[in-house]
Image 1 (tube, rainbow, N blue to C red):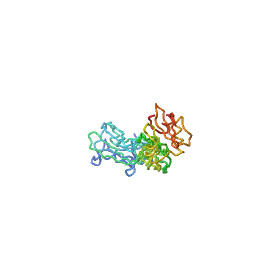
Image 2 (image 1 turned 60 degrees about the vertical axis):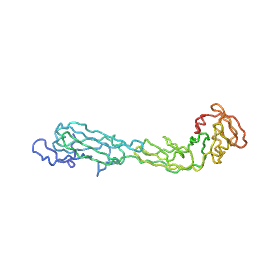
Image 3 (image 1 turned 90 degrees about the vertical axis):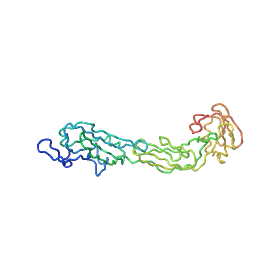
Image 4 (image 1 turned 180 degrees about the vertical axis):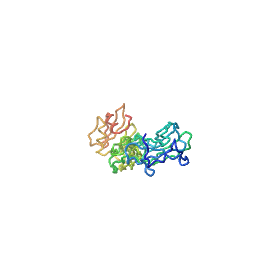
Length: 319
């Protein structure tokens, strides 16, 4: 048994000998030695924290007590969930504890999961005793600051769309940013899904013109982000019968495939014209078969799709 520091502990009850006026004893709230002015700053000490409960009126050996810590931990999605630790569960106290009060440790493994700036409550109860006051502390977590590159991203290239599937805009990879510091796991979000989306690994894909704000949050609920701006409109192509060049051009508001982008799309077809030709495609038969139309000459050719490469570009899935 480690006795509390006498300078921090009330005069003990005396179980034998001279009687002590019980009215001077109170049902005081537990105390945490490492707490300062209502804050428990985890960066100011190492290891466990230490809880003391001063002796209370009518305490006796064998009396059963319960001591519980109620805190909050981050749920990994910016919110919080209960984080409870039972230090004593109706356990009997010794004669020495009835005299001096009780002492327990709060393991560091519990403290390190408490959410920054959350409230930690420590509750004490004893069989047959009045209600004890509850200790309430603000936790200052010892966590690394969330850091990520917040430089704005500007994209001026081309985005492809399929005429027959207007709601399926092929995604185009632009960047991947992950935190260089913070408390994992991290979660990502986009303010404008029609402009840019972000996946669980931080990869950002573009879908249309506009500006989206990409956010990342860590386990402690801290968030940072950066903007992604797309200033070029989508370019449209066709895969199914009935899609004419005029319909494609109208859907693209007059836009054509830039030559620098034609290569990346034409690489998905096994049989194509030279890279310096504009074209669009139409579905013409069985799975994987298309008809390619030269946008300069109007010539038509049959071709087959390299399905794996086409999917890799983010094109429509129905091939």
